[in-house]
Structure formats: structure tokens, C-alpha cells
Image (cartoon, rainbow, N blue to C red; front, side, top):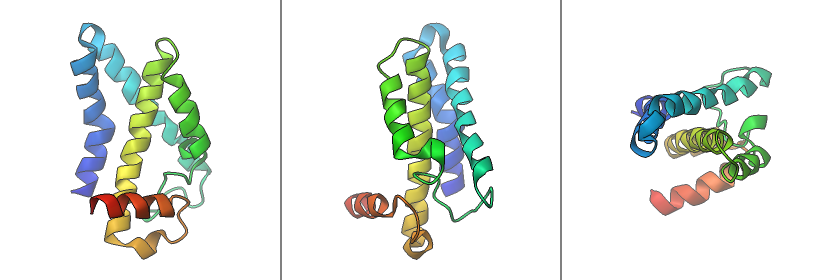
Length: 127
């Protein structure tokens, strides 16, 4: 179920957001939101590139708290920057939700995760 939710939030939810809130040019907006998936290029800098037990939230440079702050600033700029900011924040939120799934399944697996305290706090609020 975690995998389905993760990929739905990455690929399906942006299309739904585009259709519901940008009806006039939803296809263009959907493509722009989906293009923000390119933020995962920072995974190429990690060693190993893929680790199924790694929480990308706060770990990769484009998933860092500083990057998230920049993505929030993008929301206040004109199009297309605000749409890009929205897509990047949706991407980060999706990765955070994925980290919550991992944390709740095995909190000791994320002992060294930069966002461990945040995951612990949010997890205690909802689970």
C-alpha cells in the first residue's frame, strides 16, 4: 500500500490538482507539476544512489530544509514559478509521508535520518 500511495501522490495527485484548480490549461499545469519530479536528480549524488530504507526528506540536498524554504518562496512569485514551487512542495510532502510509513514500520531503521525527530513528533500526533 505504501508504494501505491507514494506513486499516486507523485504522479496522480498533481494531475488531479491541475484539473481541479487550473481547468483552463490543466494539461500544461499538470506537465509542469510532474516535471518537478526532476528534483530527484539529487539522489544521483548519494551513495548508494538507492537505499530502500533511506528517508529522502532532509537527506538529499534538494530535499533539505533550506531547499524547502526556497520552494515556499517560489509560491509567492508569478507563474510559472509558483506552480513549480507547488509541485516541489507536493513532492517533498509525498516523500515525507513515505518517510512516515517507513518510520512507523521500523523506527530503528531511521535512527540516522536527519528528520528523525520530526518524524517522531508527527507520528505521535497521528498514529
